[in-house]
Length: 496
Ligand SMILES: Cc1ncc(COP(=O)(O)O)c(C=O)c1O
Image 1 (cartoon, protein in one colour):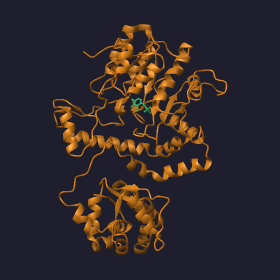
Image 2 (cartoon, rainbow, N blue to C red):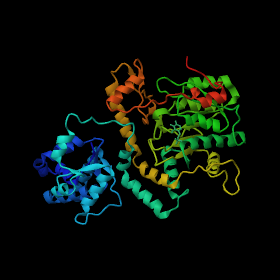
Image 3 (cartoon, protein in one colour):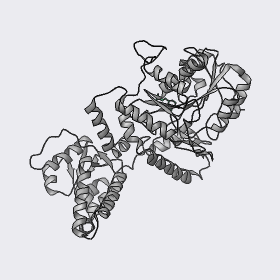
Image 4 (cartoon, rainbow, N blue to C red):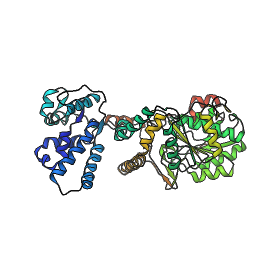
């Protein structure tokens, strides 16, 4: 089955009252296609739809003010965008000299390897292998043997095309200026994120991993007055995280001291952190809490322990953009907050990227040096540095996406609520628990399979075309890199 690109005439049939009665097949096809993974509209069609709806409203309802008309139209467009994915009309198309609109719609369908669903007789005749009529569509696509919709782990095209115009504008601006390294866009994003998170400073870097490495290195320079931590220096973290958290600790010279998690939130257990600090004493230099799946750790306790024992805190916020603990953003509690803009993250770029937030001016100065070869002057440097800058193009994309972050976070939370409600009576699985002080942003919606075999459950989901993944199949303390190098001696405190 091919993807379907819905032509403007079908959209107008759906939204214009008198056409609804005249073209019931269009309405049926439109209704069937709502929220289907294979249903698209062309980006070039959106302005046309707005224009034609405006025209038709003006004709039929001359009493409506411009403001009223625009309100109605924007509601329709919003709805269309929530139903269908957008196929970006390519900038380079083969021109149909008889009808430019036909060339655009056919090129947009070609870009998604799809068929144009249209009532336009001429178009149907001219491009028989690239078009399909509503009648034909209903016959073939709605038959019983047609597969049900697939639920993907992640559908980035849908997200990207939702905000395509903003992204495209920002990218075009970068191309025009061609200032690709640490440009205005990077500065603007740093300011925007510092203000969003509520810190004085933010430093754009090349990935979430680099955000962690640079922060830990900067703290060694600040606190220990040396380039790296020593192997005997212990940094407490959770073993239930992505590799990068533990790896960054090793790369900063220190040894990770793994402390077990809380079985409700899956985040590091503060009681066990304190036990580990007491057990290992002055060797412990800091804590790296990870706000896993988008739920903040108990920052009241972590900050208290850090103050009491003079430890630094570097928050791993790779999965928690926008999450709050007690109404305060993650990334604003510790000495540094480390964010990832990996494409799948809640705020994701078009490649790798990251950000460090901090309130500490001295740490900020060191971080600026480390991300740019190690000095204020890169031709005469003070420290062992990195080439770890955030690309201007990534910053431009992220600035466009920032506009939508609150809307998307709210959507994630609503969807999580729907899942919670519908899964709550299944006794063999555990739905996510959210701490009352936490504003969870559901980077992942993670369930625990309790009494059944997880692989079987995954297989059953697969048969129903629902994707799932295991986050994480191997905890860090069982990974070769940590075991081999440190001989398992890094287990702080295990749950009983
Ligand atoms: C918890 C955690 N820490 C660190 C990272 C590393 O971020 P990045 O992939 O941007 O290097 C990730 C994500 O990939 C992560 O999920």
